Image (cartoon, rainbow, N blue to C red; front, side, top):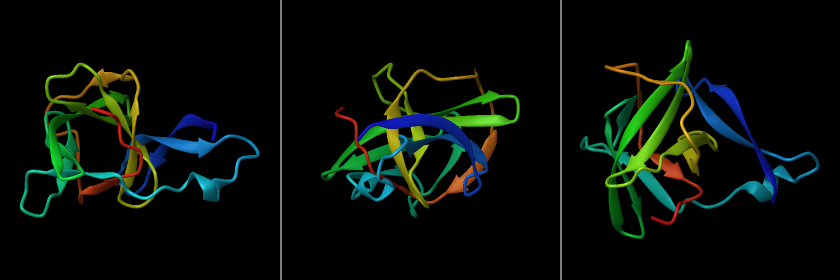
Length: 133
């Protein structure tokens, strides 16, 4: 299925994340997929904060890939990216519903944030499209 990428404000995270939207005429129901992995933080509950430098693991098929979140901003708009340890590639967290994302390989947009911005806490997130790492 062909999809287009757009930016939208995510009310559940309070930051702008990439969202995938079906191309004109596409059936949105056929775009749903079962989770193929999960993004989890280092806390006991697996939650994490959306801020640059936050350690977050991508877990799929019983294997964990360590990585780091990076948040870029264009003024009041924030975009979250996950980068696997030892890789230069960054994956945008693309909204896919409540507590779920798709990992989309794309160059970062904006300026890297420093400190705790935006720092919004989230639960572990289901990943609906998993990159080959």
